Amino acid sequence: MVSFEKVRLKALELGFDFAGVARAEALDDEARRLEQWLAGGFHGEMSYMENHFDLRTDPRKLLPGTRSVIVLSHNYYAEQNGTSGAKIARYAYGQDYHKVLRKKCKALERWMKEAYGDILFRAFIDSGPVMEREWANRAGLGWNGRNTLNIRPGVGSYFFLTCVLTDLVFEYAYPLRDYCGSCTRCIEACPTEAISPSGYLLDASRCISYLTIELRKEIPQEYSEKMEGWVFGCDICQEVCPWNRFAKPHSEPAFSPSPALLNMTAYDWSQISEKLWDVISRGSPLRRTGRAGMQRNGSFLLKSRAKGEQSDSTRLP
Ligand code: SF4
Ligand code: SF4
Image (cartoon, rainbow, N blue to C red; front, side, top):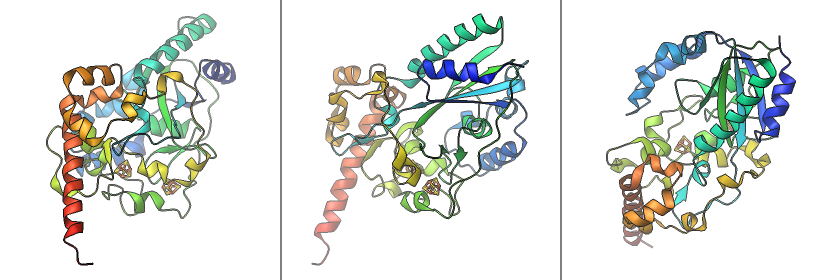
């Protein structure tokens, strides 16, 4: 058995904010919940969520020989909610987090292999069939709140989660208990009613993050007055969460936004040229939705606003 403290301290030295570890085992309860979620069609067009069910619910099948799941969290909180009326989720302000965190994971891998020999080490950075939030809970990093995000008491939820599968064996943490209490703010604040009435269940197909990033078709008209100014992702259920009052700005320069990005309006996005898109989106998570996707999102917002203004002007004084 290896002491996790040394690994934790190294991860912190490399720039991660928190690290925990859980025993690798089958996620039986979570598998049942995932099955129901998929059966309910709450994943919308994200059919990749249906793939690799067995691997997703048991890391020992994903990487044979795995004994532990190390969870690393990295702050991405930025105080400013940028943007000239066309809001972008904070996680996408800076450089693509996959690349930034991959570098830090590589450094951790090198250090662990020097320290512990030829060990198994495979990092999943919001990629691959791994249920990061469940592992973060089991590793004692946070609980999964009614908004379905992993929240750490006294710190909040603006964190990227990375899971490392390894064959090392450690002493394991206990899962963290739920601190949502009687709060329902995220449920009430969600403009598209994507969170179920009692929470802990997200209809992703109604979530603004899905509508602006994952959906390839036109955004359905039923959402035209519900986008609240978002053109890429949505942070509302994090912004209203009382635990995020404790959020502190990150200190990773690669996650800082360029002024050009923050100055973009809905109109600018709707008209963005190939040249400007290339400059603004280079190395950014915005690439996921593509130029056509951002043009669609900008246009949708503009049309929604025009519709809103029209209905305001026809209202009796
Ligand atoms: S991200 Fe926005 S749309 Fe999605 S669940 Fe949270 S508040 Fe609702
Ligand atoms: S807003 Fe309230 S209910 Fe929602 S996740 Fe935060 S503490 Fe839990």
